[in-house]
Image (cartoon, rainbow, N blue to C red; front, side, top):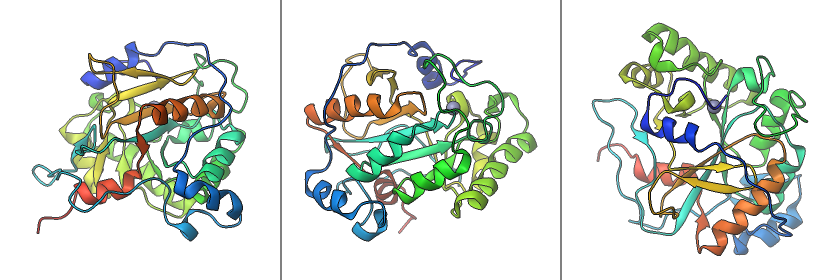
Length: 286
Ligand SMILES: [Zn+2]
């Protein structure tokens, strides 16, 4: 589900950057040191709320303001901050690696999921580029409720993963509002963020998303490939403060994730709580 007729610049880059890479073993993923010990002791019985949301939150005055244009939800590729913090997002939902839920719960890793109905409900054809499809359809929405309980916001990535820029307004609205209603029904919370499949959108998409209760359209600045390799969309191939990283629910996600998180920490970056940063960046006019 990564190819197709991409129209946005980010989407084209994302399509080009889907390449494999051998994984290296990693014994331990980094996490926010001050939080990890308490989180381990708390176990599964007390999800994120008991200790506040996972990930670092912005300091006063740290985050620049993102202003919505013409009353439409803003399109956000990165968070305006100079702090060395990045944000992890995961799309679709074909592969439901149980080890991944355990990992983010125990280590309190901040992640935002963009769920797509036909992937979560395992209809259509899963992407095979990630390797053997071992968990397809295994957990359905139950898997996303587990993620929710581990502190992961479940956001909107349409019902069927179309190229929205090729659809009319009503069809786009059916895709976006339909997915928001479904996610609310299945997880109890209505999405406030939307990510267009392939990164392809037009003004109608933004209007439709706004009418479905979406407050921001989330793009990305780098993609994470199998093996935890980061594929940048900037020439200097470095993480930058505020970067939003895009992964997919793939086979071996837990393993790749360990490699990725370790790599991010090694470069001196923290993992941020996207919702808290968006709250700071996209605030109503004073
Ligand atoms: Zn997708």
